Image 1 (tube, one colour):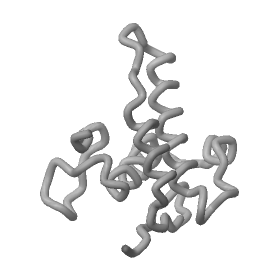
Image 2 (cartoon, rainbow, N blue to C red):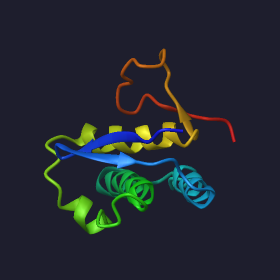
Image 3 (cartoon, helix red, strand yellow):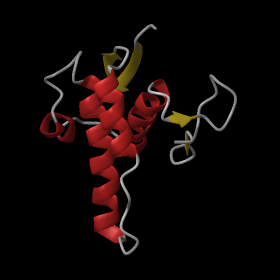
Image 4 (cartoon, rainbow, N blue to C red):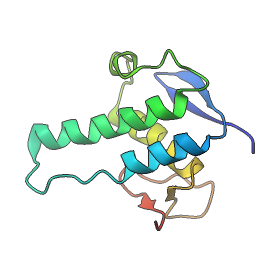
Amino acid sequence: MEPIAITLAGERCEVPPFTTNQVRKLHGIALRRMPPDLEGEALTEFIWQQNVDILVCSLSKSRPDMTAEKIGDLPIGEVTGLADAAGECLIFAGLAKRKDEPGEPVPPGERERAPT
């Protein structure tokens, strides 16, 4: 299996094939239950933290310098950049799938989780 590349703040980051432990951790992150009463700022924080945790885990082998703090300080420009990068990592791990045909972009929030 070949690595994939994601882009964070204009920087290309390689994501090598995942280890079993990384997939296990990513699965846990992806399946975090959002408390039903979350809204507003608390909901935003939950979603952001989940995306950051996915990226930190995904980049832990190739870019151990990409900590949650460093990712939080990146000038991403727009929210979809972070969410799209995290989504690509979940797809690469087999924990999510694209709604459309492979190769077509998927709008943010339009990904489906793979069956568990």
